[in-house]
Amino acid sequence: MQRYFTITQLTQEFDITTRTLRFYEAQGLVTPQRRGRQRLYTPGDRTRIKLILRGKRLGFSLAEIKEMIAMYGSAPGEAGQLRLLMQKIDARRAELLEKQRDIELTLLELDDVEAGAKKRMSELQVREDTGTP
Amino acid sequence: MQRYFTITQLTQEFDITTRTLRFYEAQGLVTPQRRGRQRLYTPGDRTRIKLILRGKRLGFSLAEIKEMIAMYGSAPGEAGQLRLLMQKIDARRAELLEKQRDIELTLLELDDVEAGAKKRMSELQVREDTGTP
DNA sequence: TTTCGTATTGACTTTAACGTAAAAAGGCTG
DNA sequence: CAGCCTTTTTACGTTAAAGTCAATACGAAA
Image (cartoon, rainbow over the protein chains, first blue to last red):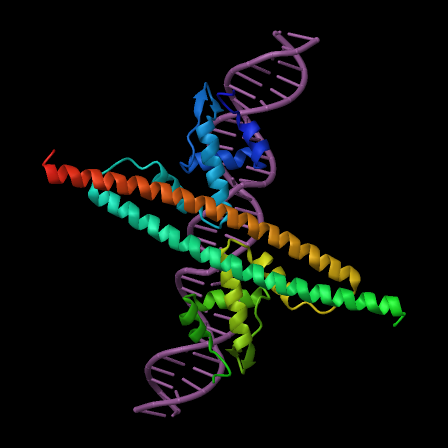
């Protein structure tokens, strides 16, 4: 079981560059430990990186992703803070649900385009079979 | 029934700026007609704008969105082109399905965070009730 | 016709998210 | 210890997607 990951290990695993990971660190999205000057990433850091990349795939900005990650690790807090947290959760959830609908619509449209393409393919096939020019 | 939309009508409907619409036009994503110098958007243009914004919400770049819109309106074409089109469709679909999984995971995590927050809220409530500091 | 408000065009600026290049610092390998 | 490789730091460059600003231009109203 591996305690730490080097920066190059992670860049290879996730297909990103060292520049990217250092940039994320500069933005406060990950804070790897150091052995001397070298960065050492814990499994926890690795998980955060996964979260970041997932957020990016969904079109969130690094600032938004930072906020979401902060939500995950939010301390207990008092009533007001908890209410604020729950508001943020609701807002994010609404966004994600909208994205879900967007995806469904787009998938349906892709189905349509594909159906049309298949139909035209089969028509071409018929012409080949019958020798129609 | 309205034949044309002005640029400001559309900016108000979609909460974007005129600069944005002109930029999309410069990128070849929409091509409104002109009356003199003034832009006139057809319902079809309006639909394309909707598609663009949907694509943006899903994190696609304008270049990708342009490609997808081109797929929708692609001419019949010959067998090779149709096969290429279907490959593109498959690739997009795969991307969208990945985004769907990403969303599901994120929603589950939000549920977790919310559950934790609710629990802490109720604990605070108990302390209030019992007068515990 | 002057004026007012809205549109257009072009140029320049900005922001996020990295890319690229240069210089110095370890660290291991023979 | 010299040579080589990787890593780090610093600084500047780049790209996409607009924002901002200035100079008109147009159409309608007064």
